[in-house]
Image (cartoon, rainbow, N blue to C red):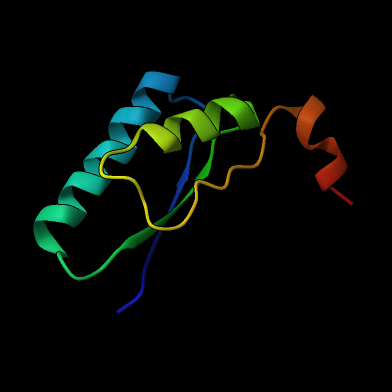
Length: 81
């Protein structure tokens, strides 16, 4: 079973994103013991560094990642064609 979740928000604060991701991880640990949910975070208000720090604080740590792309226009402009 492969499970992927995309989290996208222009409105969530850094703390809200951290709480949401930790809640997803807690649910995964309780209900999907043999599986890992892949989470892709897209929050334009966060920098790459902020997103990476949030993902790195999730406990227990994810097996893969964190991999984060910056969302602020000044940082992600070179990612757009």
